[in-house]
Length: 480
Ligand code: G6P
Picture: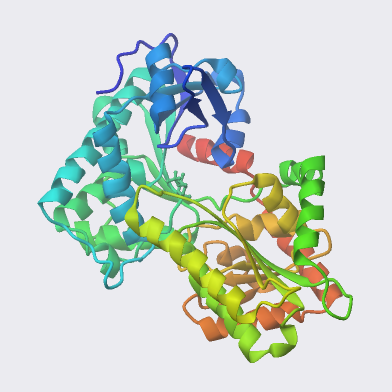
């Protein structure tokens, strides 16, 4: 299934993830254009020296990626990847779709984020078993590629719920390797996790326990994993797997620099015009949110809380704008498409109910634009981060770092970031719409000097473990 490939030299550090650091677009003329992504793993990997011969193993996600694999045999051209060695796996499209959409994103993601609710129920039928076989095959393709690429006793860092079986599979192929698994999601508590069929639950846990070290973003998720092991597999973590916690932080240096480039200044001007001025001539306040359009992000309840604010506190009408960036995500899944439509519908309803000729209460934008996100972070008076559940939530950490004049953070107690940021945030139960409206009012009313002080402390906390250190800490912990 994986393309045949002979590693030219063996890596001493390997990273494996579904989504890699680069993706390709293929146009009608057959030209391939590479687009590099950002994120914690990209800056983490760049922090290790070239002598490690690090290689990143990832899956082809679209036709452009598959064409790039066909042309290169899977070892991508380093000029497309900023010099990083990347091995891309062309997993059969149906197998990948079943594993990624059919298991990882529609079952494991839903379990860890506790997203099932009537009529959105788990279905573990024969078709699920077929998709599960694809999930196994997909994990095996990664394990085999990693086994081929790794030098003796190399360190392998396997990422996320897409790859929960790969650690054990790799351990069986290469007992010499030092294997880490990192979960970027929450982990579900046992009562919820055990809605998975017993054998599947045991495979997921046993797969991760194939690693020497299983790491999580917060103590809470790490403890939930341990509790699930006890509940499903019996007392004691059987394989001697060590459990770790590494709370990924924001990349302060990068963000501060990037947020002051000219394209961000341009976007700030446009946003300021859209937000406009209140009837008394003062600048309107901005409540900002930036998310993938993702069920766990709780965007609809955020909009409803904003509506409740306008309803219960009419003094805010025409004096505030909710700037909501909701970038499309996982649109192959019907429930994500429906959610995207619902977000748009609710935003329109609020605008038609409360809007006036000079005031659009909700500015909803769906086209992904990083420069515009940074512009919104800089000018936000309030940032709304209200996920139902979230592994960490980096928006909560990025806003305080780039905020120009201080920003009040409304933060869900179910975000991983809560463990670190609660003290200086206005915290909410994400299900409580009324409570969130009250929190928005409190945040909007916070005196400027208090807001600035809190933002300073939040920024310091948010940058305590920047991506490069987060990554190096995991490597160091594998050696212990
Ligand atoms: C979460 C997951 C990541 C994933 C990201 C985007 O943060 O933990 O592994 O890459 O969502 O999701 P996508 O399905 O677009 O890769």
